Image 1 (tube, one colour):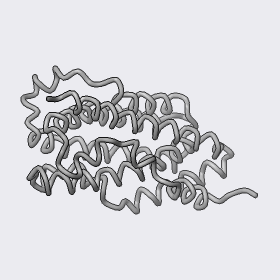
Image 2 (cartoon, helix red, strand yellow; image 1 turned 90 degrees about the vertical axis):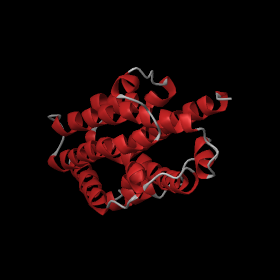
Image 3 (cartoon, rainbow, N blue to C red; image 1 turned 90 degrees about the horizontal axis):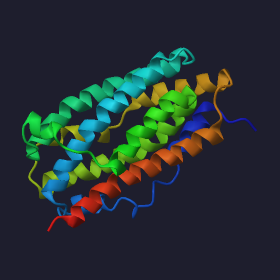
Length: 225
């Protein structure tokens, strides 16, 4: 039986979250045990991830095979990334990431950058509606991570609201983005450009890349004396 756009979207976001033990860094931040240098590395890695993801979303929005509803979804994501980059600055300052030159000299971790690399692959090779579905699955997990991190930063590291604004942004409910995702998935079904099984496979790869991001930071945290 063919599934509706709402059923597909709810089935994607309603799937169990990634293994709670997969993100080893999250519980360290939650109880204030992560190194401050690791918090800084998180800011610097995101400084590479966000611009890359934004360009990927803009490319998806502008592709000739992207329908108007999918384009609206990717445009909204790109706008959100621009806002996130602005808020990231306050978090990076609170972490003591140094001057612009020091931040530019930071060498990103391959494990962290596998995420934007795969998003870029999807932007070049994925069907737009399928990419919407794959991203939606991961965004649900990411939002939960941000909620936990924001709480940990406030309670254990003394970060002010402005410094937590980057994580608050993603932790907040996004009903408009949900509406846009629903319209995009519906568009994919109506134009026969959405293979749900393929989209779910892509979503699982994306979540693996997400896990790799956090594991790379956790490994670095463990090496700090």
